[in-house]
Image 1: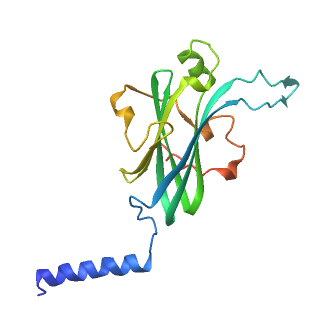
Image 2: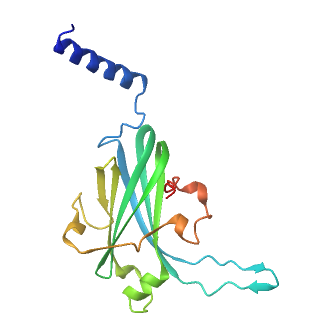
Image 3: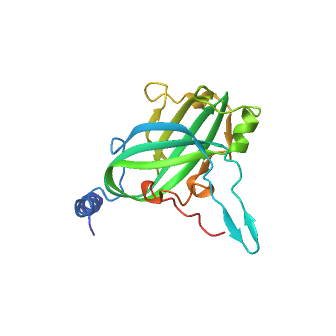
Length: 198
């Protein structure tokens, strides 16, 4: 019968052997990822008109969308999944949302993006046009397997999580596939994980 210490040593050696064969294969750690830039912007609804049967559907008047793009980097050969949490402080309301990306390569310029719809903007701003002063701050977290890997804010310095002290509103931040921007410049953004069938 093998001594317990020998079994422990054998297990540790096997784990080390696996990690040696598969370096950086999705064992993401703090320091493996960096948020390079957070870029909020005001976009207009894409103008599209089409014919459906005998009726023509002209493009409606474009409305304002809030786009938040995140430029980040990975020092891991391949990452199976990485979740990006968004905290958008818009005119005093902290809107939150998250998107999970899959099959991320080692790269400097990886992009994630989420949006706030014209209707949500109109409700928060009482119908007034959105401008840069209304965007008070944006916080971003990169998360893997429940662990926060790195944090950055558009305005606030350091890794302070200012959103922790604010009431958070969920369900109002949309990923790209949930907006009319979905099919546009598809290859720029990291692939979004498809939800499992219910």
